[in-house]
Image 1 (cartoon, rainbow, N blue to C red):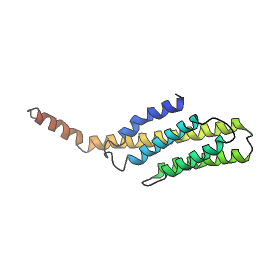
Image 2: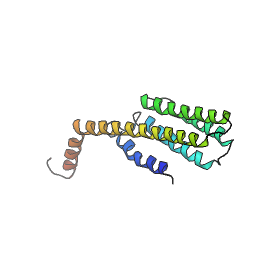
Image 3: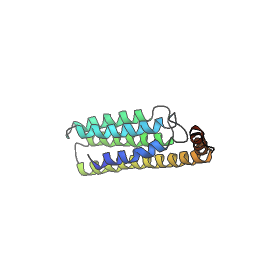
Image 4: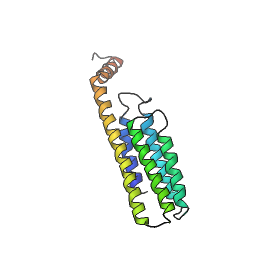
Length: 157
């Protein structure tokens, strides 16, 4: 596995924690969808053999990723990740029209954009996880669960 794949799995617990106070409904779906699309797009690019035609396929992968991330429901983080997917597709298209010159610049720019997407996902997950944990402890949910557990065991809370 590449470091990118490890990083994607490291951010997954934050995404799971981000729905602690809100449940697993509409609040977590766009985040998990963005995570899955980013992971699948990355895995798809590793499967394709490098070459001139591969960059056309990379452009399609990035365009499909942008469309998938930008589907409803969405928020500002989805817009940001989708915008970066679109920028990656434009870089792919430019590289195809440039005739294959500057592969090193192309690869480094795509890596920068990919890590920028990951950073946005990390910030998004951290922000929502913090907010969810604060909501969980401030709303009395933790106290209610402790009292319910004590009553089930036959003790007074």
